Structure formats: C-alpha cells, structure tokens
Length: 590
Image (cartoon, rainbow, N blue to C red; front, side):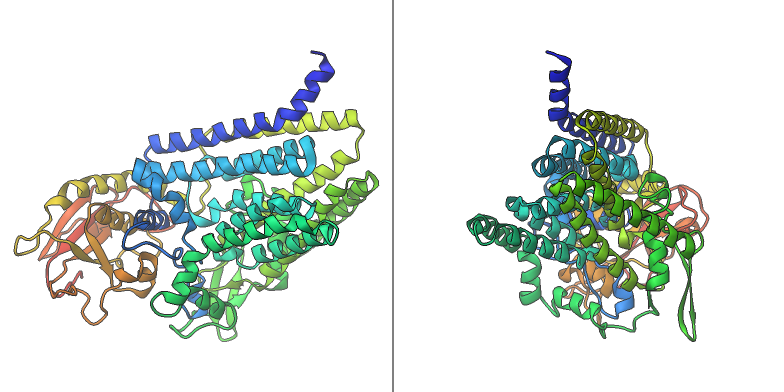
C-alpha cells in the first residue's frame, strides 16, 4: 500500500480511531471512579432515588425540583424523567454507585460515536475528524470525574454538543437526522430547564431550513422524518404530558410557563434580578471569547460565583473574577471578526456545508445571548450551572472556524491540518486520563464519599431489624431533612439507603416532596401518622459535633467518626456524621 493510499485510509477511518480512544478514556474514568469508592451524594443521590423508582408505584413523571423555583414564587421541576429512565436499569443491575457511573459513561460514549457519525454524514471525513478533535477537547474539559457524573448541568454538555452537530447536519440537507435531533433535544430539555428555550428554537430553525431546501421538488423526503420526529416527541414527552393533564394538583409544564411569564403564588419569591446586558456580555465573553475559553481551566471559574445583597433598590450582584466589560467587548469583537473572515474563506472555497455550520452557529449564539441577558439571578447567585450550554456552543464555534480554515486550504495542506487536529485530539485524551475533578456540583463533596459509604454499610445491616416500640417492623418513616444546612451531601444518600432496604419515607416539606414524588409528601396536619393511623418514627441526620451526642428518646442507627467541626459548604472534610431515629409520637428531633 502506497503512502497516498495509507493517508486516504487514515483520513477515511481516522474518526473511528479517535472515537474508540475517547470511549476508552471515558470507560477508564468510570471504572476507576467506582473502584476508588465513588458515591452518589447530594443531588446525585436524589437521581439514584428516582432512578430506583422507575417501574414502581412511585414511578417518576418529572425531573428533579429546580432551584429556579425560589425566584419564581412557584415550585417547578425540570420537565421530564429521561435521566432517571437512563440510570434505572443499570442501578438494578450493578447497584447505585456503579450503575449510575456506568450509565452516564455509556451515554457519553454513545454521544461520542454519534457525533462522529453525524459529522461524517454532514461533512465527510474531514468534518468527522475535526468533530472528534473538538469532542476530545470537551472530554478533557469535563475531566475524568465528570465523565460519569449524573448531575444535570454536567451530564448535558456532551449531548448538547451532539445536538448542535445534528442541527447543522439537518440544516445542511440531511433531513433524515431530524428525529435524532428531536430525541437529543428532548433529553436536554427534560433534564434541565436551562434548555427549554434554546432547544425549541434550534429545532424550529432546523425544521424550517430543511423544509426550504427540499420544497417543493423533493418534499416527499420530508414525510418519513416528519412521522418519525412526531413519534419520538410523542414517546419521550408522554410522561410529563400525563403528569400535566392527569397528575395531582397543578401540572408541572403549566407551572414552568407560569414561572417564566410572571411568577406564581405558591410562596413569596426571593429577591431576584435579570442578568442584564452588561453582565450578560461579560458572561458570554468569558466562555466564548477570552482565555481559557471553553477549556478545563475555566470550567469552574470562568463564570465565578457571586455575592448578593438585598437593598431597597433590589438585588445587588457583585461578581469578583469575571472579565471586565471592556475586555469582554474586545474579545467578542475579535471573535466576530474572525468569524467573518472564516466565513469568507468558506464561501470563497464553495464549502456550502460549512456555511450551514455558520448559520447554525449564528442561530445558537443569538438565542444564547438573549437567554443569558434575561436569565434571572436570585439569592442563590450567579452560577455557571445555569448556562453550561455555553461550553458546548464554544466548542461548536471552534469546530466551525476550524472547518472554514480547512476548507480554504489546498488538498495537501488540508491533509496536514487534519493530521494536526488528530494529534491535538490524542494529546487531549492523554491529558484526560489522570484523575481530575472539577468542583462543579456534587463532585465537590468527594471528601465525604468514605463517610457516606460507611453510613450506608451500617444502615444496610441494621435496617432489616428496625422495630417500633411494639416490636413491629418499621415500614415507613418521616424524614426530617433539616438540621445540617442547604446543599449538604449526607441526607439524600441516607434516604436512598432506607428506600433500597424497603423502608418507605415521607417528608414534611413541599420542595423535598416534589423531589421525591407526590406519594412521599406527609400529611401537613399530622406528618407522623400513616394513613392507617400508625405512628411513624422520625429519622434525621446530623454532622459535626451534633453527630456525637445521642438525645434522650433517640437511637443512633449509624455513626461515622470524623471531624467534629460544624459542616460548611466552603470547608468539606471527612466529618463526623450520624443517622438517628426516634419513635416519639411527636417526632421532635431537636
């Protein structure tokens, strides 16, 4: 085989090699994480709970409760349960830690291969290898520990990148991929409310662009994709639609609309304000236009957290570490000029498919800019988790510019350019192999994994013999989730262990009730009494010094000996933590 033939084979199949290598890196990360003691904690444990509920009497029809509720004055959940459906079977097969990790890793591996396949269809081998290089960059950005993490903002970065590639392919004329775009878009929309505007706009623009390209001479090509797309949407949205029209109380989709169009009256909303143009420009530029762009060094703090002060004039936001307005404008101007120059390269080269990539990019940038500017900031503050789609958009921006440059090169130069991208992809994958945990979401609680595993191991032993004052097996408990603090990692895994051992629970908290399902909301008038009139014991978790003492009338079910200092979100250590139960009819946990 000649050198030219070898180069042709490498170019034709190079994306497959890169996809396989990326898959291996993701698999290594998940297997290593489980072997080292990964535990679903905090919000991830809620995903475990609802994943176990799939196909049971507590089958989830919605996603988890959304923090967007606090500023809207109405409780809303993320629209759908597809993430729970994803992890349900693996949890049953492998247990919670391994099942969740393997399910998310498998999702990411599937995304990697689908991106390569879509790019190959849309733009040929060059596009496929370029897309795989960008995918490897995103995998490096997420770092090893987020590649199997189910927390919604993190788990959607790669799928949204796939959606952008698929929308590009549809706009370029491959209408048969529109059902795939609807499926991936539905997963993103249901899993996190941050996608409920951007995804429908992308799908709508793609549908119109595809119809215009084939109408009227080839309109028959639309029939099958249209039918399949309707079927995909109907199947994937059946559960949230059922909840909306036949579930108890006000349907969640209606609640989402209310929250987005003026707010509700469930409770007094906390003070909030919109991001606004100035802060929005700074946020956009921090990921799209200024170093380190969408790379790993900026995943945690390109958009840093903020401090908030409620004043007579409203909520004042102070963001230390975010790029200045002047540098943000300059960076965005440079990106705009680079984009115009690259678009001219593509147009001059007759690269029509690359031009459609620019059309996709302009669409998503316009929607992203509007969304960022109008996104509310409440007392929780500015947080990158609300706009994680910016990282995928930054990746698509890089992909589009790279494709335009490659299109302008001679065949020999293009071959060298594609080879250079493959090398960069390989280096990114090698750099991803060492363990790295971005402090985004529950991964910030890695120091608690050992204590939570210890608690769950102890509970697994004692819960089978748990009895009430009359010696009868306890079948249901009231869970008091207060006492440690907002966002703490311990309580949800303990809940998960009770449920795993067949002991049901209820909560006297409307927000947590929406997390756990409608049948787990206690009667607010008598939360410690079951429908049959029996008294429920109360279970609660304490950390730090509060875990050391056992109050009168209370039994300590499990105890991990660790740091006795009070728990703090800014100082996560291996703390002392304990699980208590009381059979006092009053349920007093003080």
